[in-house]
Image (cartoon, rainbow, N blue to C red):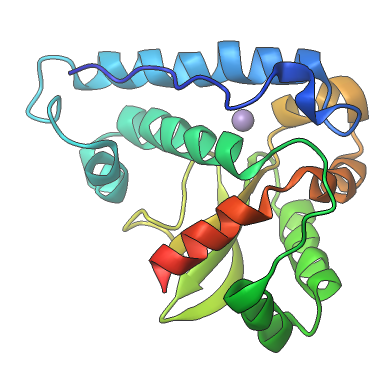
Length: 201
Ligand code: MN
């Protein structure tokens, strides 16, 4: 069964002014669609074509570069749209807030670590907040890799991920990746991050 592009859970302009509508339209409708199409092409007629996305992603390093890049791309973007949402005053609460405070001191401490991970990731990739051995940890991956992959340097269950490819911010922020990383905290859907945290623990 072929993979399909999931609908955005909000309108493309819903994240304005932090992330502009045109970036969302191209990022979702063109870039993510291309990962889906190229993943389907890569597995068509092979022993991998009926596997779940999670299974493909976990073993991507030993399947093929095309599955690693496009399976990772499909998983990462599907996850990314869900942990973003219209700007609100929502903050981490409950067990997630406790874990953030005990690991990073404050929410600002977490943001600093994530922004540093995203800024220092050379070229294209992702910054991640993961649960590893029951604890929160910040890491980053190159290209469309993610911490679920067996080939990842630091493995764990992602609960928050930030795309630092230029296609995620270039129209509005040009070369200013740190400005994009500051702005994106205004549109994090903390309820969804909490939900991932609850499942990962
Ligand atoms: Mn992207």
